Length: 89
Image (cartoon, rainbow, N blue to C red):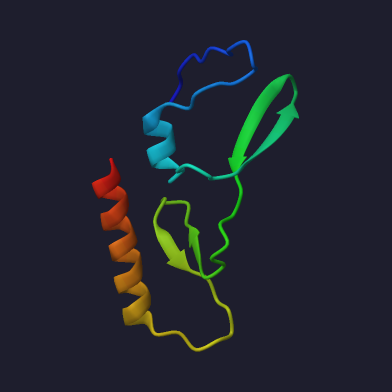
């Protein structure tokens, strides 16, 4: 996805809704900013829930924690979260 953004007088830019949706960004999400070779890179900071992460396919996957996990409950929780995100759009 490529698009032109405008910087306002306070130095802010608005991320397009498609980019926010693809990266699962919502109000309060934190981003890391890096200036690399005259470019700006924004990277979402990891969420507090260390049990799940985005795989390269953009699907949520469980990460090993060494603790017992109820996979059915985790799956239900993730499906409910996805449903809530869809309803908010």
